[in-house]
Length: 112
Image (cartoon, rainbow, N blue to C red; front, top):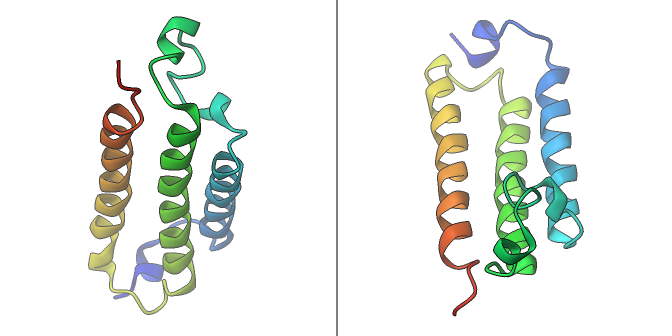
């Protein structure tokens, strides 16, 4: 049984989600998408001063790019991947999100 056998939706959904993540990655990596970062865009100016905005955008954009590439790979090879790969997909996306949060709160903070 393959991943395509257990998927309920149309195939284009994987491609659409991968394209959305790729677009977000490009926007963040260009340094113009800080308004997309949840929590950062609603914080006070004093709180924003604690973070290096360019580095924060780079970290979030890199994470979004990793997720986009992984989703594109799954979309392209879903007829060859085993059904047991579905939990791996969730773990990779969740792990990438966790790494993004940790990096955002460590290397993206400015030194006092």
